Length: 400
Ligand SMILES: [Zn+2]
Image 1: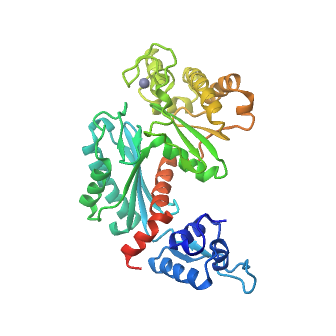
Image 2: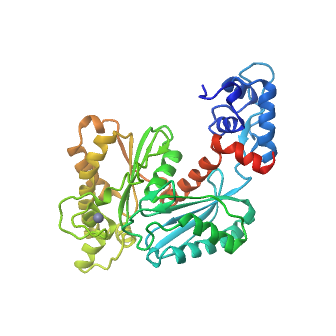
Image 3: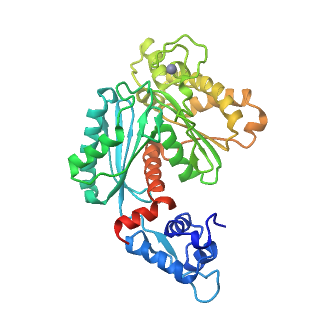
């Protein structure tokens, strides 16, 4: 059942089995790992001493080994907190999360990405300090930070790579600056910072929350820009350089100038920003994807017609995406995600893609809405910190 068994299964492997729900009693852990009752007990004791495990609220269940009913074990999602933030071009959202993804405090406001990383990350540090106070959590309880950004990220270094919408951020040490900003505003010790593309983290959050059994999941975010996140077998697929899913700059043969400096990109004709420009040109006040979202919510007919046309443009590109990846779920998220845009996507997608690629495809809208990237960022930090290969080192650092 488990890839590592016998004497190789460490405390981290037991924690993983409990967290995933695959084995939640001492008996089930013995069975899954082949470890003796005494060894399982010793390893669990360390996890209890660290405060990472607790007895389940559900009461005893029947043991797979027979005999007395067993006490269930569960991951203690309250022994630390994660700080998360989602940066958009002119707006940001930040939160304190429990380790199981519960939002303990949240804030959103104006934060202009073009002001550069130093100012923006210093301000985020201030937000985090206020959010911790609001949530009643001490700075020392923060175990990590997760940050979503609207650009391609090299996940090994946490740096953005030639981001069209983030001038001044290329190659900047985001993780170092954000950890320092937290310390400056709260006195918290340095913590790990994970940075990823916003569409990747939205996809990760949505897949885990609503489609955990979907082995090939694609999310397309259509806001000021256009990006896609791909989750395969439960993990974010990033490609070799973190560039996977950056579909907004595929050339679709139009002559509009894109923010990346090229002409004819998908984002230049079908993003929220592109729809806003066309509305403004015909006298409707709109400057951004969120303005278009407000117009769509109010049932503005010209906005709806342009959103449907944008949906057709995106659907044409998605026909290729779906043919290549054969996903079970294609989620449309972001400012334009609504009935007119989805109608346009479906029109072109089903017309252009092979029937076999779409036979079992669900085209859906977001469940987590504006919080998707926050939830995904929190989950990524927790999966990183409590991964079996990191648990041993962290337990030793705690002295247990
Ligand atoms: Zn472009």
